[in-house]
Every structure is written in structure tokens, then in C-alpha cells.
Image (cartoon, rainbow, N blue to C red; front, side, top):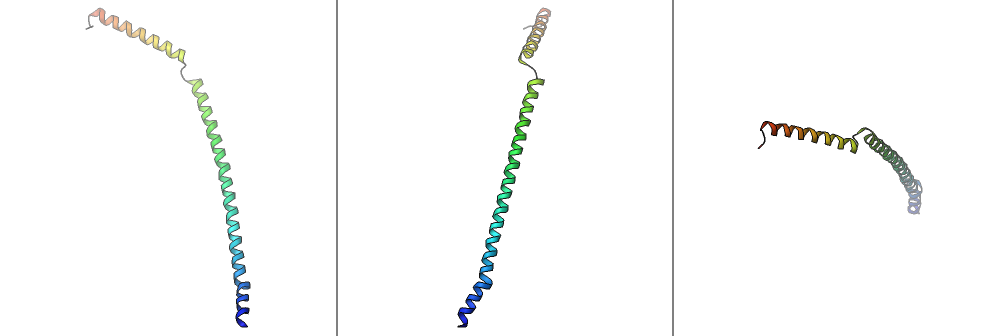
Length: 97
């Protein structure tokens, strides 16, 4: 009769608290992991939003501060005119081929 009492005592005193503590440890680790994942997700969403805002500001800055197409065409016309005048002077002095 001592054998069944020892087994029941072992299950009651050791096995049940050990299984309960393992279950509690698993539950706590899972909840901490879910909390960390949610925190990372929200931080990631914030970073993506900041990057989008920065990109939009950069595009706006480029549109405002860089050369426009009409201005480029004007510069091209002026350079072409200068090059044609230089070419005409060279031809006049006999440097043309």
C-alpha cells in the first residue's frame, strides 16, 4: 500500500506544481512575445510614415528649387547661339576644315 501513496504524493507534490509552473511560464513568454511584436509593428508603421513624409517633402523641395523645363530650354538656346557664333568666328579666321 505504500507504493500508491508515494505515487499520489509524487504527483501531488511535484508533478502538478511543475506542470503548472511550465504552463504559467509558457503563457507569460507568449504574452510578452505578443506585446513585443505589437510594439515593433507600431514602431515600424511610425517609421514608414516618417519615411513617406520625408520623401514627399524632398519631392516638393525638388519641384520648388530645381530648374524648370522652360528655363532649361532658354539656357540651351543661349548656349547654342554662343556655339554658333564661335563656329562662325572660327570659319571666318580660317580654322574650319
